[in-house]
Amino acid sequence: MSESTDSAEKTQFFLYLVTLAYGEKDTPTLAQVVFLSDKEEEDTRTVAKALIENAKNTAPKTPRFDWSTLKVQGSQTLNDKELTKLVDAASQGQVGIGRVSGLKVSPN
Image 1 (cartoon, rainbow, N blue to C red):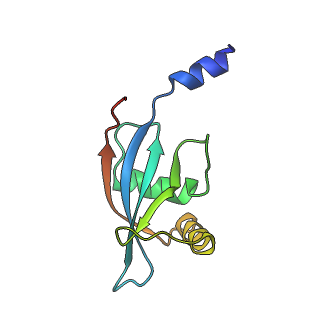
Image 2 (cartoon, rainbow, N blue to C red):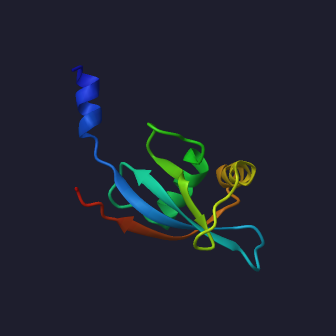
């Protein structure tokens, strides 16, 4: 194996459940999405910055948001057009961060 492959396999990721708020200011739509970071101590400020700078990142880039995990109002999903609109708004700073919670993943 090459050195770059070895180091990539050793990279540690931290998962966060992020609550987003978007749409109307008085009655925002709430959604949750998983954020993958290489930093252990993320908070609303750092995730908000990452949202603007990295909303369009896809695997294997880190940090990134796993938009396939997005749930709106608890259980709804967005179609491709709605998701694209949300990601575009996020990258322009038009989506707020309500809460950031660390997730623990246990090995099988």
